[in-house]
Length: 208
Image (cartoon, rainbow, N blue to C red; front, side, top):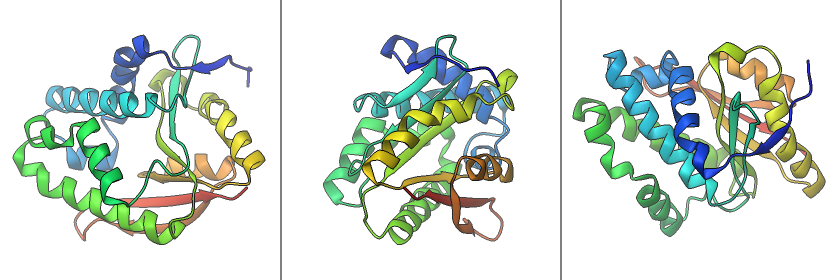
């Protein structure tokens, strides 16, 4: 595994990074469940969504990439992913989640509400409101997957969290991703389905 230069993502790179993320996520089972079946519309919806997530996370200056944009790891620092009503409202407004029905279709809105609610409840129960580093997005360019890029992108915050004595937390949607996080020191906190007919999700914690 070659060592990469891991850098902060620049605001000017967010558009290109969102397109890479959309391409990587378009076959993800949960994003397939949440976005239109038409692949062109799905790509558009995922590009919009990942762009919003990166823009939101960028205010905390904890988004990491490589010099040639092979992937992105976007973190929220302790206290910035909270169940407090004002924090949730701030996140909804900045992510423009009120525009979701327009982007993904009204027939997907109920699914989104279920996913957002259940992942929030899982986070509250798993962490019991303890401060943690929350990994909001982890994506590697499809052509670069399996080459150690993702592990290197995680290292700045994994090291910082260990130094600070704080856990890290992530929600993910595939068994392949679960194995990736386990290789990087995470342990499964729960495995759960959004509904009997919906895909599963996993939450994982990394202890300091």
